[in-house]
Amino acid sequence: MAGKLEVERKYEVPADFALPPLAGIGGVASVGDADDLRLDATYYDTATLRLARGRVTLRRRTGGHDAGWHLKRPSGGDRSELQVPASSSRQTKPPAAVTAQVRALSRGEALQPVARIRTHRIERALRAADGSTVALVAEDSVNTESLHGSRPERQWRELEIELVDGSRSALDDLDAALRAAGARPAASPSKLAQALGDDYPAAPPSPAKPSPLAVYLRDQRDAIVEHDPGARDGEVESVHKMRVATRRLRSTIRSFAPLLPAGTDLDELHDEIKWLTGILGEVRDGDVMGERLTAEVAAEPPELVLGPVAARIQQFMAGRGAAAREQLIAGLDSPRYTSLLVQLDAFVDAAAGQRVTRKQLMRRAHRALRRADRRLAAAGHTPQDPPALPGHETRDERLHEARKAYKRARYAAELVAPIAGAKATKLADRLTDLQDVLGAHQDSIVTGELLRQLAVQAYAAGENAFTFGLLHARQHEHGLLVLNDLPRVRRRAAKAARKLY
Image 1 (cartoon, helix red, strand yellow):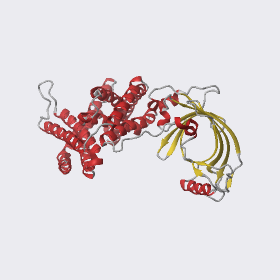
Image 2 (cartoon, helix red, strand yellow; image 1 turned 30 degrees about the vertical axis):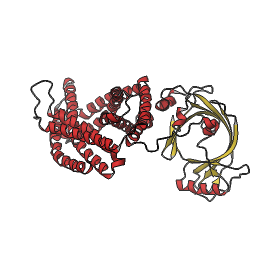
Image 3 (cartoon, one colour; image 1 turned 180 degrees about the horizontal axis):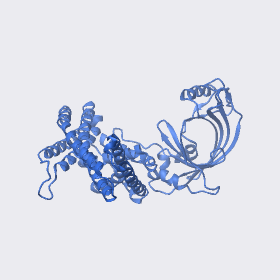
Image 4 (cartoon, one colour; image 1 turned 60 degrees about the horizontal axis):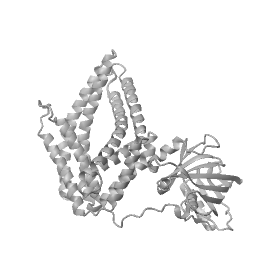
């Protein structure tokens, strides 16, 4: 399975179009001999063309240099492409490695053939003086057959140039030469779009002025779907961004509940999103904790590191990380996850039709901040030592609750920024600083508890547990010291809040 970023441009060309001389343009020293290719591709999608709605294409192609399964997704202004070789010439069912990558987009619906596209391609390599390939230029004669509707067969010519080792400026120079010769940028986004014709889904219409609340909810839903493939592949940043999107959704449901669609069971939706947040968090927290503990051990003088401390930490975190990733993949492959995505679709669509005023949004955002302030004040009035009565929160627990409340207030400030401007953005930044201080305190507590577990394990194995105890003490000290900065960041946040609310 191989992935790459595809940088290409497509053109419509008249019947009498002739490829112009390209040597001397964009670093091209010579044009290679023509390679005559016969390509036969079957495109797959759901019955409702969910992949096409997300501008994703999946095909199985025979012929050419890269026969097999090709999955193409938008990536910035370009396209990323995943290639998986076909297991046999008769394979017609998309392999699991591919279906997993589009599960969030397909919402678990079955994939089926929707079009067949046969292409007679004349391809030439544009080579630099050092023999590297600047780009590939292909003249295509295309014949398409829709398997989805009653669209008649179509035939046309087109031109495609794909960057290989050349620069984007080289592509711009080659583009200018092709346009001068009569080529025009393709009006259709892809061969598949032309094959399906009117069946190809257009971009969904959006309200003339969607509320910031509707836009924020939609963006978080889209972020979950966008980062799903990367999370499956173990990309740390994708797991992080997917988790942040779930947190923003949960916070928005809690902070803006009265303004959300009345027909939605918000408690159930919140709990399902919380489940997804949890399985993402197990992976994310494990990655962060492993890096943190490794750095803590490395920072200690060698004479204070007694026993196989680093090895024990690495072994423990690797085992926990593997289990967390296994749980995450199982969750992402489950009907529960696809059901959640379908719920989110309905929720986002319903929210888009809600009329919400600026005053309502600002009031709810302010209320989220006041709630956080109250929780921090309650923590400040709680003794440091644990209470004697069961069921009463400790100071650390109340600080943790304040941290979560400020995170919700920060997300609320982000949400109203499109209507409140720079003051809301400033408040969100100040609340981030406040949240970071409280987060560092909570991290020291969680890290200390993990170090205690590791010390017990080391002692049971007959190892010296001194270093784990030392690190535990350092975490406790750090947790207390970091709170010294709390009054300052709290004052700055309060000042920013007064200017906004």
